[in-house]
Length: 474
Ligand SMILES: Cc1ncc(COP(=O)(O)O)c(C=O)c1O
Image 1 (cartoon, rainbow, N blue to C red):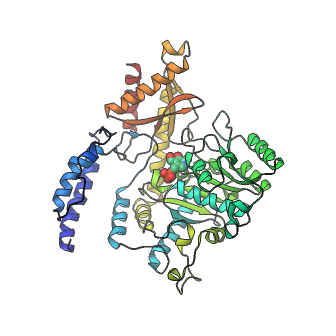
Image 2 (image 1 turned 135 degrees about the horizontal axis):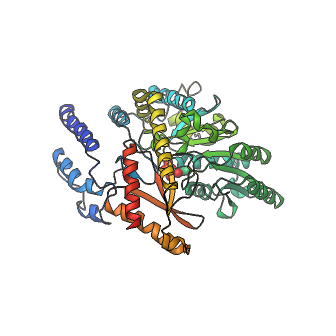
């Protein structure tokens, strides 16, 4: 493709994206394709001869779009917001256009220094102490895995440099709440710590980790000759957005010499609004934190911000220095290849830079406050409506509900209630007008309304609430 051809097609594609965003609302939110339908429309082998780009665009409309679930739809209330603001779309395009690889400072000094600056801007926005330094990881799952590897190495006295985990006597143990995201358990298993050493700590009535239960488990393990290696606390759990009490957990982490990682993947972004920072109390005492601008903030995938209090420890664990990577600048600069697992790195700071400048902190904080207020509106409506329950506190933008119709509520037939709540949520999703997801908490099927798509205004939350009442009652 020549630059001239690129220019012509590029304008077309920007127009296409703009129109898609303008016209997304009438589309079905959740894709209705059946398994294998998209694949069946694709040729089994790559084309031998070049094809005109127009044909690709036509196939995008006919093959790809029907298989898209529209995360930027204003009635997307499923999982968590995963916003890609248009300024971030442009930043991402610029990163692709520049086509740089940011593995080392020397491979593009601006790639490294913009990332350092953006991680510091975001740190300030989140109200994190000066001591923390950040790097972009692909996802929170990766960030948690990196934290687990650092924790394992610190607890094992850098066992990787000798006989590895096989050489240490006391088994390492890891603690997280029974509401933690599955990526924590995955990180523990992949770090070689083992299922038997994974502790799922009970939560209280608000779904936050019980500190007394954590203490009891730590004491029991130490008595049994085990070595506490890490505690992973969550700010904003996946199911109900509960936050674990960081300060007392940090005290225990210190007492037992365990690494404390905070998974604030989704709700951490709320901390840009200072009134939310009660959930952050104690954050100054933790070892590492993951917060995802690729969820609620609007950078699009993959941009998870991973902050550590002691960057030198992280780089000691992560760095490899083969001759072919060394540069003359190494002792004066940051080489982000030493801050995570991947060597090659995309220029992801560029889209964060575009987003933060185009929106300003005031614009971003206003949007987060809008979403918090919309969730509060829904919570109040559900609470005052007979036959409906709010089943967990609503500290952020997720409202967890249950419909308890009179004929089932009287007998409190839990199996029938679970089936009923799953069924009405599925009916809404199949209908295409909105998309929400359900889960099971404390053995009960609940439906989560996760507010926070960039396009979602109060009017859309009101429409959803009408749809929920109509559908659950029908
Ligand atoms: C609390 C929490 N942690 C981690 C994750 C995983 O995020 P990622 O897709 O960035 O790995 C999620 C996603 O829902 C989450 O809610």
